[in-house]
Amino acid sequence: YVPSDRLTTGAAPTHRVGTLATHAYAAEDLKSPDVMQLPFGTRLQVLDERRHFFETPQGFVPKKHLRPLDRPFTSPATIAQLHFGVPYLWGGNSTRGLDCSGLITAALTACDIPCPGDADLQENALGERLAPDAPLQRGDIIFWRGHVGMMVDEDTLIHANGNAMAVTYEPLANAILRIRTVEASEVTSRRRIPGLAV
Image (cartoon, rainbow, N blue to C red; front, side, top):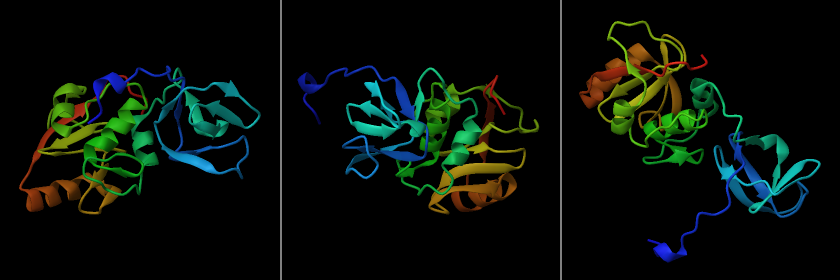
């Protein structure tokens, strides 16, 4: 816990990390010591623009790795795919480790789509419910009891899962069968967020 009187609102962020991860450096030089690692989606305030770096309160960050907040990404499925191979971590919400709902949160938040942090809350808050027999498309979200993934095409799911201990692709039919067999869970809903770039 942190005493509430020590919390501040801080400086308004202007940019976010738009690559899988980056570093803040002590100086405007890639050979200078790195001060900290910054995972995808980290929001920073740019204080000054240099030739190859932005100066931030955290240090100097390569310009190529930051994206202005007023230019959100447009395809959550593309952002989910950027996270392919990130290790599974229960409760994880960064490129250091993700769980299933953390992957969905990262993908949607990068596109400025508000998203709760847990799968059960996501299921009740996101998009429109699809009929069980409706054709699926890129960006559709599939829910089970306690699990969630996103379609990258009409047949393939990307999800952070404990079975592979990573963010992986899996044919949806295989995931349905495996989760039914191992977790005794059926798909609880399929949802689509209107207006997504697919």
